[in-house]
Figure (tube, helix red, strand yellow):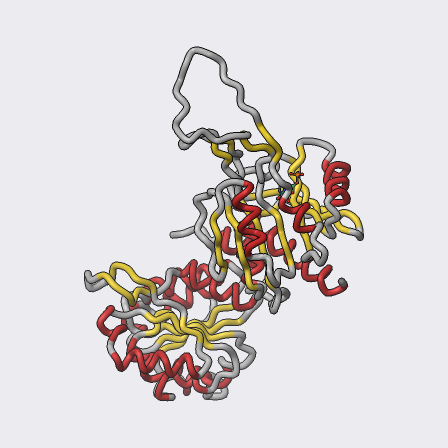
Amino acid sequence: MSDYTHVIDELGQNLRGRRIVLGVSGGIAAYKAAELTRALGRMGVDVHVVLTEAGARFVTPLTFQALSGNRAWSGFQDGEMEDGMPHITLGRGIDAILVAPASANFIARLAAGFANDLLSTLCLARDCPLFVAPAMNRQMWENPATRRNVALLQADGIIVLGPCVGEQACGETGPGRMLEPEALCKELTAFFTPKLLAGRKVMLTAGPTFEAIDPVRGITNSSSGKMGYALAAACARAGAEVVLVSGPVTLPVPAGVRCINATSALQMRDEVFAAMTGVDVFIAVAAVADYRPAESAVHKIKKSGAAIHLELVPNPDILAEVAALPEPPFCVGFAAESQELDAYAEAKRRAKRLPMLVGNLLGDGLGGDENTIVIYDEEGRHPLPRAPKTYLAQRIVERIACLLSTK
Ligand code: C5P
């Protein structure tokens, strides 16, 4: 079973304490709902599971009861709650309903507004967001009836998560696989993240640059891009339009982020200025090479016994150039220092005229998943405890949003 700690870290307080009804309809993916219940519970969510009759044939309510710590309901059990109305009582104070898996049959019932069991009645009587994670055979998913029903759900404001394409229980491959529990947790997290950057356009640089010496060799550094990518994801979750200009890394592009690839510092600068229109916030996380070879050989340099000399010329400082624009966006810099972090970071922030800079000591964060950072701005220094980069990214977004609102 997957370890969800990184998802938990990522969300901060966004899901903790929420009350969510997890609906489970009939399908082999119901076993993944058990894993989902456990994952949500570990994130501090109060999970109440409601199964359809078909769902309860795949996994028993007892399993969900043990995993959620709450009574699990199935079929139509109206008579069993004190007031005889669990479809109303259960639905009170609920932050969201997530139906995972949502079978073709359940989607059809939802689209038609049926209330012929507890789960469909809860959905009909809700006053909270409703998410469905479809899971079915690819032909059922592609059938015009299902297409119509899914379109109806979306038109009614129901959020359809997935499905994804992949191997199916029937042995076929195609669209119809339920999103994995981890992906569903991330979707819920994103939904409940405060939209602190709604209406803002954010541009980030991330990763290293690669300065070619010849067609196969070059100068680069060990930046993993993890902090920049985590920050891009956090900005997207906070509702911003996000453009990420990325040096060569092997990370997946976060959901909701437009990624533009760049190799050298000169290319990165060109891409940054080409997409600069309308940017409200510029966050320079990239470890841009300070120097590049004066010339890059067209052909591979051949080995000889003699020493060779490489002439290096300075690269443009992308952040300093953006900050020096006549009407600059809100600029955030990063600084990794090997000593005297406070003095060097604050000096850098002032030299580049930045309203905000994030500093860390080398060795604390390079390449890893965690970091220890200090945020510097006009109000002083704000140290943050050591934490995963995904979590720190959210804290940085909160600080940016706060400073933007007082600008
Ligand atoms: O001066 P230093 O390289 O330490 O500054 C780091 C900050 O400046 C980072 O935010 C980095 O992304 C940015 N930078 C840049 N272009 C450069 C060098 C640094 O945008 N050529």
